[in-house]
Length: 369
Image (cartoon, rainbow, N blue to C red; front, top):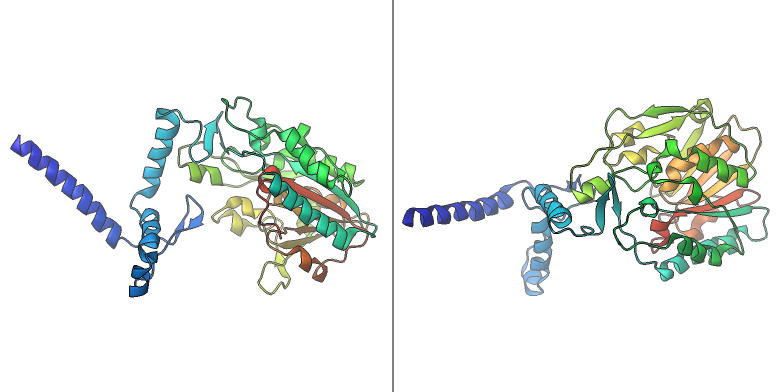
């Protein structure tokens, strides 16, 4: 019995003190690739931070972020929550039918109001009284297409879209795309839709706006697996996705310009960035990710029509599919550029203007400026 107790004490001491020393002396990491976020750094230690308790509060966050084998323990937690305790989700994430999704509930009417208010400001400030044609479309997230929700809380998507339309129908024409989408149009491990699956969506949008698309593309595939943001957040094994993109001669000739630096100056960009494809989030290969302002000029355009897209990250992969119908396409992300600053970059005259946003952003729209 003494030997058994001694072994238990030594084992516990090794675990406790060993993990403590490992935590203290391992090199802290700056970024979590699995969670795609910056990790907490060691807080400032001073008499002032000790007295006001800010050191210990910050140190607790630092210790949780820098804990050894953190990703492994996150995986254990997810597995226990979902498969042992049979919870419907783990931190709002769940795995169903091979797809990882995030619960989006409840409908936040204040966020819809805020988004609609930003759209109305743009219309009143820049579009009213011009020859622009203004359109609106809502992209339902993939929760909408998971057939068996196991009584999981979910948005009423028709009601959500109705709420958006009730505040925008007086200055936009709505284009419905929901019936064109299915679960397979989305990545299994990521938030977004698959570009190769939404050519019919682009065709409907273009047709509703009076533009014509060739619809002829060559599909290319990234030569490595794509692990989306939900894969890393859930921390459970799942089959990776293929990341494909659609191109043709016209798209390869286009001139792409981004205004992504702090001075708002134009810099040359790419339609499909292979550098971004090899980075932390391969989806950012589409038009350089969520840059605040991007223009695409089409030298093969058969007319001088222009399109302005107010969008979130879903628009990055959609926009290339609309380029064929326009001489110039401008993408604007008002999460990263203030609506009041647009006149410095865009002359609103007689363009087609499309507001297209996912339910995820419309239901969490506080970042819209």
